Amino acid sequence: VEVNLEEQFEAKVAKDIRIEPKDWMPDAYRKTLIRQISQHAHSEIVGMLPEGNWITRAPSLKRKAILLAKVQDEAGHGLYLYSAAETLGASRDQMTADLHSGKAKYSSIFNYPTLSWADIGAIGWLVDGAAIMNQVPLCRTSYGPYARAMVRVCKEESFHQRQGFEIMMTLCNGAPEQKKMAQEAFNRWWWPTLMMFGPKDDESPNTAQSMRWRIKRFTNDELRQRFVDMMVPQAEFLGLTVPDKDLKWNEAKNGYDYGEVDWNEFWNVVKGNGPCNKQRIQTRVKAYEEGAWVREAALAHAEKRAQRESA
Ligand code: ACO
Image 1 (cartoon, rainbow, N blue to C red):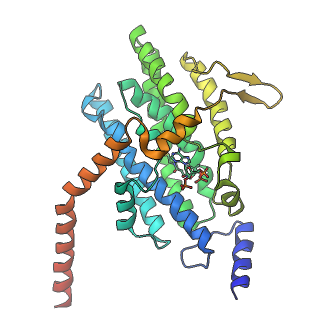
Image 2: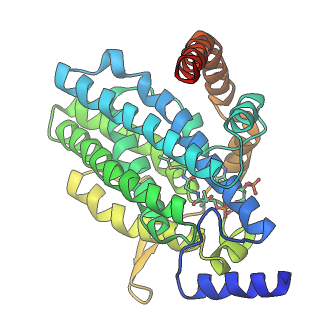
Image 3: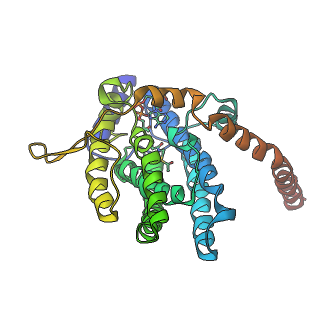
């Protein structure tokens, strides 16, 4: 029977028929999805912190309102994604505990500090640009709830990216000091953004199987290349210099050649030793502890209501 189920599953994936929560699926497929979706959820939640850092210091009321909305969107994305992981049998409490103990991974990018207002522009432009590059194909991922969550997430990410680009454009068209801030933020965020796509294909243990299962639709290097090709003209438009001396147009491949990412830095951050890893986790743990009364009150309220309804 198992063989049959496996064949049916493979046939569905091959025909791009979505796998749904109650469908049979191989254990390893389920495990891979829980891993990727929960890491993705954690990234959205931790991703609120570098930008949240600037809400009180945004340079105008309008900028503050926009940034606040964007950070709230990220909370929403995290919650969708936790729900998608729950449809696979993962427990929310366990996922939260794994994040807080340092066991779970989340995107390396959110372990870097936001030193100036220009970093908020650079994050929107580059980090959300990379997120879109990675997530638009995930709208066609083989697992239904994940694919559907990505549709709305991507729409909101596009708005985030535009707001980042617009901050960069304002700075680049401003005073020389503002232009300098923009260039410095670009220099800080460019390489860590390229790391978001994950290790090179030949060093990525999960890519081949995830491509076969159509969880991933493109490899890490394919998406990184597309991202570079998309961003270079945008940087030129802003009048910014890409901080990569090896960057060069390659006519034959119809794309840019670019320098080597510092993979030591990448793995160091992934292992928990980036500039802000400890601070990020501490902040999440503190927020969770301080929110205990909300969870208790919500539970007490739900119990009271259930009692009233059954009485
Ligand atoms: N930061 C932290 N960990 C990473 C990163 C990164 N930038 N890139 C890869 N890793 C981890 C992987 O999670 C994997 O860890 P694990 O096997 O212990 O779980 C390991 O490094 C090896 O990488 P891959 O084999 O390439 O892993 P995978 O096939 O999962 O590809 C990728 C990684 C591209 C990030 C994929 O999981 C993905 O597309 N995830 C969904 C998008 C996402 O999570 N985005 C988060 C940032 S965007 C945002 O939140 C705004």
